[in-house]
Image 1 (cartoon, rainbow, N blue to C red):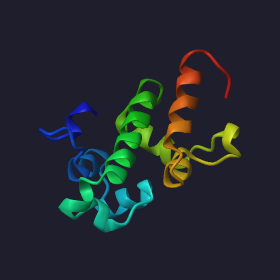
Image 2: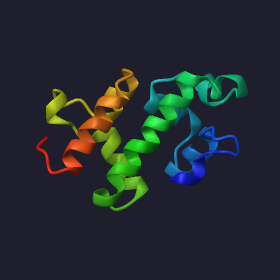
Image 3: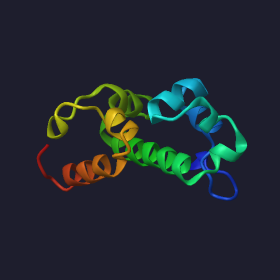
Length: 115
């Protein structure tokens, strides 16, 4: 999913939502952001919006090898409860601004750790 960033390195919500086959409104919900955050140019470039977009991309990229595809990895992101976090999903954690803990969790699993 490395091709969702533009020339300046900013993640494009339009490209990302297209790759995930969802609307920008659905993407905003999956990120815990307003629709304006993924639709209005000045809001798309904000550090908070870009951080959430990058969190989702990094999480999906880490899950693709064992999920099998981007869409399956996104389905995992949205629906798979994570026991280490009280059965919250990765989406729940990203929406709460805790994307870093999901990435650390996935790194720990990749290194052979336990959930």
